[in-house]
Image 1 (spheres, rainbow, N blue to C red):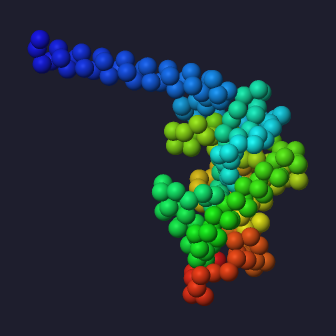
Image 2: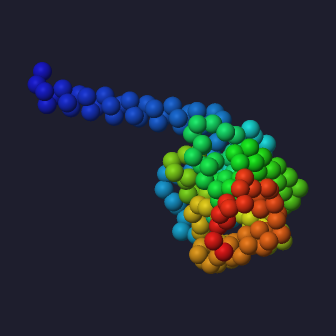
Length: 219
């Protein structure tokens, strides 16, 4: 058997293995009832999903959570904001330090407490108030999560409410909002909301700092 023929056989075998793994992943997600977001962005703008119901799940946190839509499960991730981690493990150690530093030098236990508070805050809102989901079906990296904007009947979105409560940092990609407001403009708006939360010492901004010299985000 020639070397070139062996290489061809090897490529065919690897291709078959990849197809098999993808098929297994597909079946696994179907069994869990997860709606499979498309591999590419299908919508230029945000699409509105109504009749969405929040679902309790151990993996839920302040900015990422499971909902049910048309009998299927979706894992949503907010645009614009990032809530603190709720658990400490090796893969998030660096992110926890960044989150602690963002809020002016919190300790890791304080940051984890903040993450738990954000989780409860988001769950309480989504259980008690009517909301709509807007999404482009854009995946978060290559995970099952999709980016979304959550709008409430008062005209405010969940990212705004988290920042206003001092429970999230402005950190991740944005999107043109459902009312047409551009991402950069809306991020600037969130910066103003954050300043007000900082002055009022809400959420993270009211927690004692490890050192008086700890730096705050630029005003």
